[in-house]
Length: 104
Image 1 (cartoon, one colour):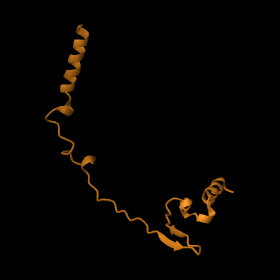
Image 2 (image 1 turned 90 degrees about the vertical axis):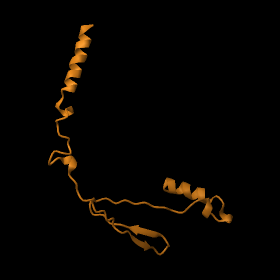
Image 3 (image 1 turned 135 degrees about the vertical axis):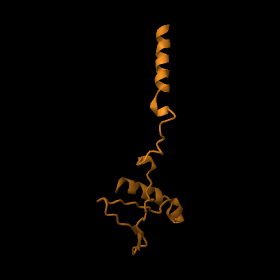
Image 4 (image 1 turned 60 degrees about the vertical axis):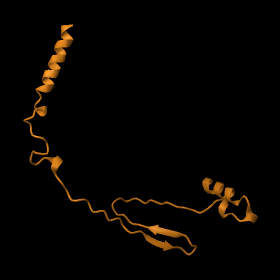
């Protein structure tokens, strides 16, 4: 019964005697050359403008070069679906989608 009580007393005495919690210790913002109080100007963000090109078939391309990484990223948005399907060609949209997905 005495051991847990002694342990608790030692724990609390170390907690209250800690120099970081005493009233005399300076707060981090008071210490000079503290990295927490350093300020920097906000970074300037200037995104590159995309170049717009229209191909002869009406397809619109947006090109934006970025020379930091040697990567090519391509996104294609193709306007397809039964919404664009003529009334006399019902079933063309699902057939086109299946052919595009299978690569044939």
